[in-house]
Amino acid sequence: MRADSGARLEEGHLRPPRALPPVPSQDDIPLSRPKKKKPRTKNTPASASLEGLAQTAGRRPSEGSEPSTKEPKEHPEAPVQRRQKKTRLPLELETSSTQKKSSSSSVLRNENGVDAEPAEEAVIQKPRRKTKKTQPAELQYANELGVEDEDIITDEQTPVEQQSVFTAPTGISQPVGKVFVEKSRRFHAADRSELIKTTENIDVSMDMKPSWTTRDVALTVHRAFRMIGLFSHGFLAGCAVWNIVVIYVLAGDQLSNLSNLLQQYKTLAYPFQSLLYLLLALSTISAFDRIDFAKISVAIRNFLALDPTALASFLYFTALILSLSQQMTSDRIHLYTPSSVNGSLWEAGIEEQILQPWIVVNLVVALLVGLSWLFLSYRPGMDLSEELMFSSEVEEYPDKDKEIKASS
Amino acid sequence: MLQTSNYSLVLSLQFLLLSYDLFVNSFSELLRKAPVIQLVLFIIQDMAVLFNIIIIFLMFFNTFVFQAGLVNLLFHKFKGTIILTAVYFALSISLHVWVMNLRWKNSNSFIWTDGLQTLFVFQRLAAVLYCYFYKRTAVRLGDPRFYQDSLWLRKEFMTSQPPKGSPSDQRM
Image (cartoon, rainbow over all chains, first blue to last red; front, side, top):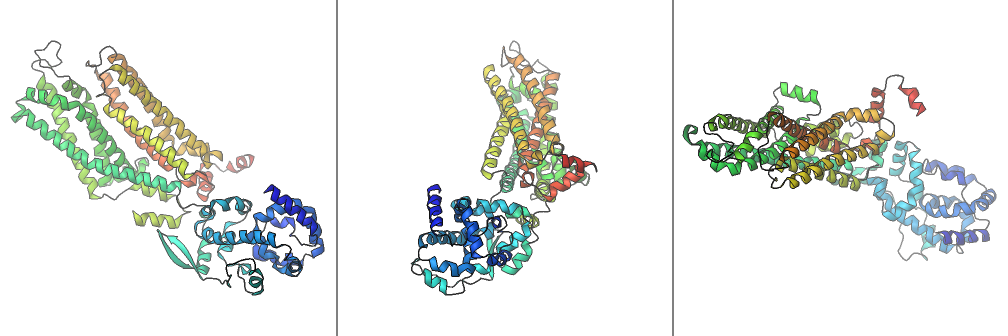
């Protein structure tokens, strides 16, 4: 880049009459491109060239960086240029090729915002992006969507001249009335003039949004967790029911065979307690997610209105507390040795006294968990936190919200 | 602006730490063949909570809201998470110290007292709430609104500040 600019600088010295655009215009070029054209034509070639000479060192490298905006504007000065066109062919070739590149990427820019440009373009476009932030976005957006007069090559002289340089034939371009906009993962043809009207209402932030945002990542993770929760609800209900059935079967009729239960169940007690905690934790978190428990006022209102999901999360929490309170007994069962063994935790008549409440609590937990599962399956799609977290306060993205609601 | 790849990485790290926490809370009682195993599990668990606290604060610092000086707004919004995480961290450490203290000589002994059982219940309940609030906060921090100036932020700023807010705004 540096050597290149040096070479160009020398070139500039050789050809003083070439009119260069005045420097101050660099800042506000994208602001009002169509308006800018007229005052520029009034510049006398002599004064412009003087200015150009003084600024060549500074200007030349940046000229390459903004070819798409500048090059077309030099058409009004065509009479001056045309004389030297043949000697300037290498330079012309370079700049017009970048112009081509940027014009091809401008389609991308229209659809996805600036960030969707190709990587090589990002370096070139930097100065433009800086200026963008200082200006009102609606104006910019409308400008970008509109068809610029300079982009449409109407007179046939220029293509004919360039035929010798480009091997590919350059036809006469014309504005297409349609713009293709991606909505809900599909491209729809939209009228350009209509789109300009609608995009004028959209905020600055939409301009800079890449296609896959952190918001999408968060939503994906949230939904993935909801799926895990859905699985754990069912699995937990099944497990708890199976557990209570096993306990009652092992305990025998009227809990007559408690020592048999202890001997058979002692290897199972602690692993099951652990699994129960894991599943209960997952289910509780998932149920809280569904009612958006962090917004307590909403959660309480839902609970008082006997909303099934709010009830389910309350039941899960109760089940969790009950299940945790049996940790001591579970450990005692886990360390069971017959009372005859020395140092046993289980004295002779104590079994029923300890096991009775434990069995009841297990039964209650199974009932609560089963009920919660039923309540949740009444409205499996309900997810308040997704609605509240990702869309309630978002006035800026009205379209996006509709999309989310529609897809969920 | 938060990069999507960075956010995904941070989020997966947070979820990894959370799931480790959940795993240890669930199965640490089973893995007590030797007291050292439990000790190491507990130490890593407490470190994980600590790391999660550090990560969430780094995420706070990264937001536009924080950089604009609206620390209060941010902390007010996520005070539940911050308080709960701190409480859970304290409960975890005390339970771990207590359990390890009782089990160090004989890892298979029956150590439960009413006090320990109560602490155990509270610690496990706090773990569930911590997991829920932390997960929610981590997911919420992916909202691009926290990383840019917006109408929402201005509105929040106006509501969070009393009428005298504007001169302090100028001072900033």
